[in-house]
Image 1 (cartoon, rainbow, N blue to C red):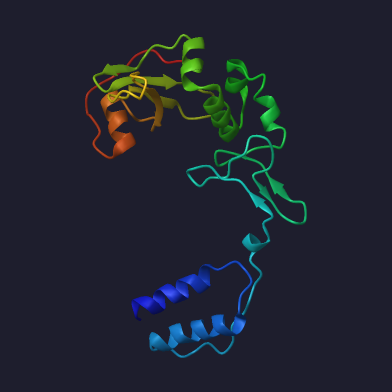
Image 2: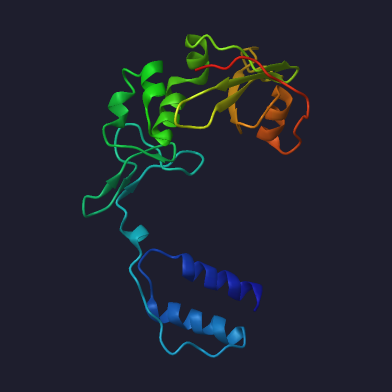
Length: 206
């Protein structure tokens, strides 16, 4: 099959707007003929739910994300609330106003707890819990937060080596897999493979 034909077929397959059925079906038959296959006897059409979406809010990562309302709305009234890609109840944004460390720790839904923790801020949670670092290295500091009903949250505190326009060095808090043992390994995981085998143990935060 020619490259141009593949692109034409891909465009037809991914389309969600109003379609010229005759042209679309001819494109499908062309794809079969080009591949040396017998043309389909019939082509079944189905309405695309994506085409009926009235409103959608996404963040820079392409995930559904909205703090003050539903991130996805359909004409029939169905709506989906989401916080940085995590489905949340409609009343979730109101809960963030009075959020506390105890509320985060006691939340049994792992997805909601992670959203709360991200909103609350890793630095604030670690400070209020009196956490001790798991490992210190040239690339930053590794922290571990122990939460009930969920895997540990492991975060690398890293200072950008390049100063910003104001001359300050920005500090980033990057979540890494719970198996991470050193700051160097955590930093490597945020940019690519290359774990550091060195040890790193210390008290945990809760």
